[in-house]
Image 1 (tube, rainbow, N blue to C red):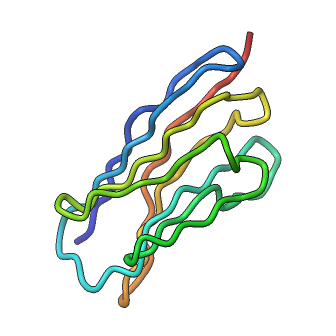
Image 2 (image 1 turned 120 degrees about the vertical axis):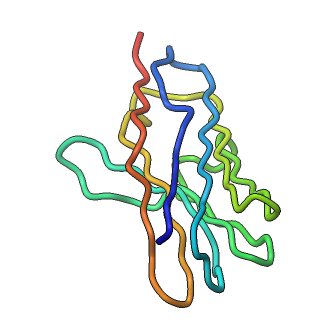
Length: 115
């Protein structure tokens, strides 16, 4: 069984920073990549950033230049450094792991940006 454990959410003022972490454990098969998604109240879940096994990354336009996704292949972890946070970044952030068997999701971590 695969488990994803997220941490690092919280509340910050506009312009602040947070770093999200996600670690995968269990019987991991071939991994294609990992990513971060978010879902704000009343909105659909959207991809924020993703990183493939070869290190290639992609970001939603609204976070380019502010967020950075990275990974540690030795402990199957992915990180999201979020800078210059804005109120519109407020959402529950979910970690996703894509493998050749299935996709797995974390439980979500709340990020709130307000003054």
